[in-house]
Length: 454
Image (tube, rainbow, N blue to C red; front, side, top):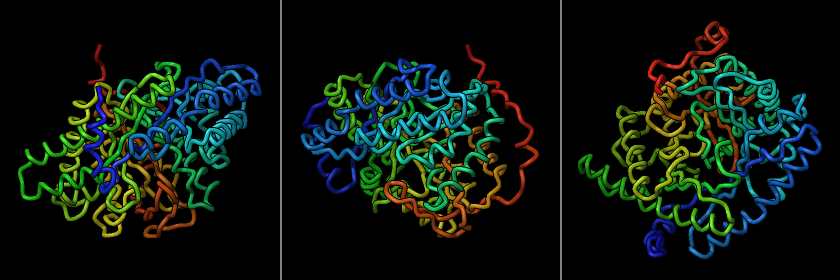
C-alpha cells in the first residue's frame, strides 16, 4: 500500500531536482473495432478512443493538483494498426486515413501523442504489415500526434532483414516529407528488437494483444534526482555508489506507484506497470550525461562510460523492483542525444560518436535514440545501423531500438532543431564505408542458438 507520506518525502526532489511522472499512458484495445469497411472502421476507432480516453487528461491534472506531483504527458497507445486495419485496408492510403483518425482523436481528447501505428514483423510480413510500413512517411508527415513503430527482430525469431532494408528507404522518405521542420517526422518512428507491449513511452508505445481491454501504464523519470544523490558519493566506493542509486530509484518508483494506482482507480482501467526509465529532457540538470559525469567521467564517451552506464541501469532496476511488483516496459536509462544537453555537449566536444553510443546500448534501456545524421546518408547505411542495433538486442535478450533522423539539407556538425521535449541535436558523423551488398542480401538472419529454450 502506497502512503501519502512517502510522496511528501519527495518534495525536495520535485521542487529542486526535476522529478516528475513523465507520462500516464492509457492502453486501449481496438480489436472490437475491426471491420471490412474502412469508413466504419475509422468511425469505430474514433468513437472508441475518444470515449475511453475522454477523462484521461483531466484525471491526470486532478492527481497532479491533489498530490503535488508533476505529470508531464498524457498519452494513449492502441492495438497495432496493421492488425486492426488488416481487413479494411487495401492500399497505403487506407492506412494513412486511419492515422488521420487517430490524430483527430488524440487532439479531441487533449493528449499529446498516440502510439500504435505499428507492425510486428520479426518473423515475416503480412500484406497489411507491408502496406502500413510503406505508408509511414505519409502518415507521419500528415499528422502531429501519431507515433509509429516496427518490431523487426527478436531473440526467438532473428532479424527480418527484408524489413530492415525497407526501413532505410522509409526513414529517408519520412525525412524528406518533413524536411521543412528538420525532418522531425523521423522522431516519431522507432525500429525495435524485442519490443515490449507494456511500454508507456513514445514513440514506441503500443497496446499489446495479450493485454486487457484497457490498462494504465506509468512512466516515471528523474535523472536530476539520481544526479543529486550520486553527487554525494564522490570519492566513495562503488558499493556506496550502487546503494545510493538503488535507494533513490526506490523512492522515485514509489511515487509512480501512487500515481498509477490513483489513475487506475479513477479511470476504471487496470494498473499495468511502472516504467522506471531515466528519460532526460533538454532542461538543465535533467540529464543522463550529467549523472555519468558525477560518477567520475569528464564526458560521456570517455573510457569507463559503458561500465558507468551499466552500474546506473542495473541499480535503477534493482531499486525499482523493490518498490513495485509490476515494473516493466523499458526501465533503465535512456541515452537520447537530442533530449539531453549533456549528451549534446559530449558530441560537440568529440567525446561521443555513434559507435560509442552503440557500445553503450549493450547495457542501457532501448538503444540509438534521437540520433541526427546528415541528410545525404544512404538508405543502406541507415539499414546497416539498424541491423547492428537489432543484433545487440537479439543476442543479449534485451530490447533495443533505433530512432535515427537524417536531417535533409544539413551536414555533420550542424544543429537540427526539433522543439519541445524532442530538443535539438548536432548532426553526427556516419561511417562512410559501404554495407550495400550485406544489406541487399535479403531474407532473415536466424535466431541465435541460445534462443532455443522450451
